[in-house]
Image (cartoon, rainbow, N blue to C red; front, side):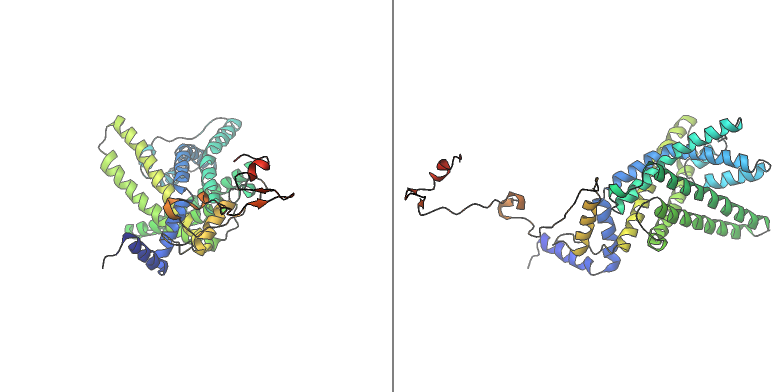
Length: 363
């Protein structure tokens, strides 16, 4: 007995709906597609490319001001930061400088670079609001969105300095090289986990808790560490033997590709938070819409509200398709033909073709 493709798809769909370990990843991917998160990831990668150099300039300038009397610590902190930036970090480790000049010029330079660097935080905040289905009327305004970005950037700088100093103290204490490397890896993972959790919570206006963003932060941390290792391989295999001209182009292309992949994986991690927090699984792949499907589509529609007076109602048609390939919107109610003449006042009888003309309407 042969089984049709449609029957096989329905069986697979039913099978995944009853297995949580498979239903959750499918729900995450489906919501990722529904939200258009791939396009949001492109925006994050675009702004990340322009923001990374400005933020490095700000970080270096602040280090030069705060640790002016300790140049060795400045270089150690900067090198530790660049190590977390695969592809481009090793290329610019000996070239990056800091802003100099009077106090006023330094303040203006840092403010300008910081303003440019906020582009990536704004892009991430916009993507997180879309993923959490925050209506446009409730999203952060011009000032509050930038304050949130400043908080995240301050957290990144502070946690990075503390973690680097801690690893440095361990190394200075005479601990073995292997132990130092292990502690360095664990410290890097802890830093990434804190930063992702802070970003997922602070950059969106949705009311979320640390517990709700922790699963996605764990996933994003693992993906980030994997990408760091992949970036190191790219530097050793592609950039190490390249000429100066080709190496520059390869570094730029590698950085853009790395940022794009990283942004897509981070948004997948954010989608995991939403799916788990709102229990948006299992999702239907072929059959009728399930409760999770309806909730996800309802949230997506509500997120398009642009005016507080706007009311959005969502309903669902479970009929699927109609015969002859027609959609439900193509159905029209057609009155049954009139077999008997209609009698108007005065006793005059008219057939159905004469009625519209008498009423002053055209067929």
